[in-house]
Amino acid sequence: MNTGASGDTALEIVLGLVARMELFVNGLMRPWNAYQIGILLALVLLAHLAARLLTPRVSDWLRQQEGWPKWRMRLAVTLRNRLRLILFLAMIWPLVWIMREVTWPSRSYLLVVFGKLALAWLVIAVLTRLISNGFLRGMVR
Image (cartoon, rainbow, N blue to C red; front, side):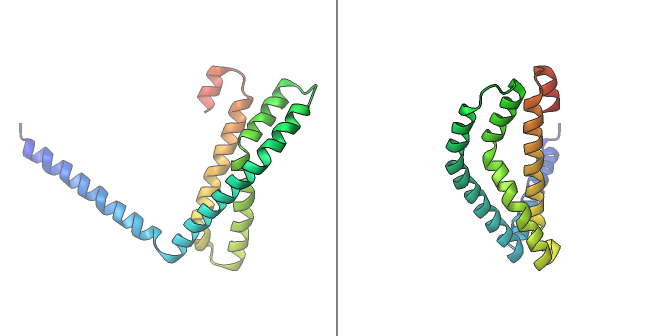
């Protein structure tokens, strides 16, 4: 067996990955990409703080609801548990729309990507919670 050739191949793969990571990090450090990352972090922090303030109120309101069907209560609890994500989405999309009107669309690209990912995550979380069959829920998830 020639272990030198496989060692060289592994080294080439590692060096290629390191070079790609450097390109990725350098791309993130472009001014508008760095601004978008800062905006994302600020939105996550704001959503977290707002959710911490609103979650107890929503929980109290949910405890007062009587006579709701099981599916409606399950949906309400799921939405309460995803309140931070919902608030993040409620803040990011208007911001993206404003940025698209004021600046070039490329200056909000990362925000759009994270907004779409967060929206998909929320939709999947809500839909899978409504499925009562465990096997089917796992397949959808």
